Length: 168
Image (cartoon, rainbow, N blue to C red; front, side):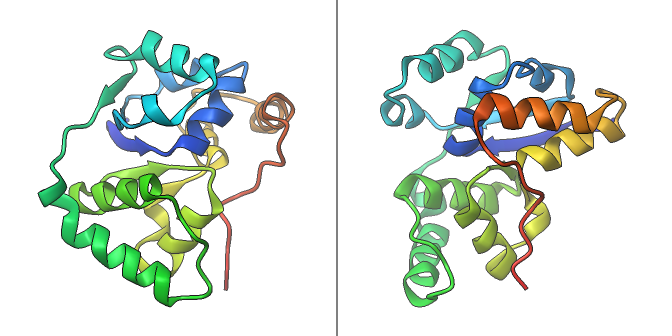
């Protein structure tokens, strides 16, 4: 199994903090990058505690410069502003897309706006939902009963878990 590299988007983290099997992230040969900005975004103590407890072990704060991503970030802002099919995205979401595009990183996100942007303007295979990640884990032999794990995720996160959205 080859090492994967992901940059995490806040919706994914919120979902997985609630998930009883969040330790599955440790079983995958992967690097998980987060932004330092996350500590200013999350007001929910459980999320901040989870990030701090796993910083350096599971999560790495990604270093980047504004100059490195400024052109891509500006293009993303322009695209979102000019395409009514897209959702309004936070500056943090746009920054995550810019870093991912610049560094060729996959994004872990349960935010439909990120997926819609990737489908229309980037590469939908570069943005994975929780179900995509769990499906990959099943393919790698990390989990056996995908349906059971998805049901637990849905229950724990109090959410309907969908496959990567198809928009067309």
